[in-house]
Image (cartoon, rainbow, N blue to C red; front, side, top):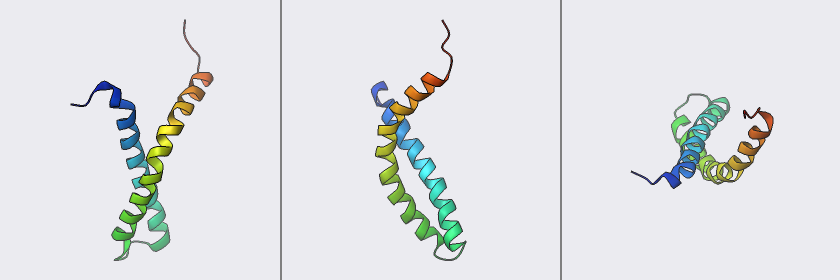
Length: 76
């Protein structure tokens, strides 16, 4: 079991992995369709996207949290 302090990084890792998997799959499909090269191209695009997405999520998540806090009502 991981320590509680690792939760934000683990959340970012999982979220960035899933989102980059989905977006790269859609983009790859729109570019080449479901042909014999689809799987290999998708995996390559996904890994590249994930390498970028994970650090971006770690940097942008605190900003997103602050923005959401400003946009929603706080209860006393």
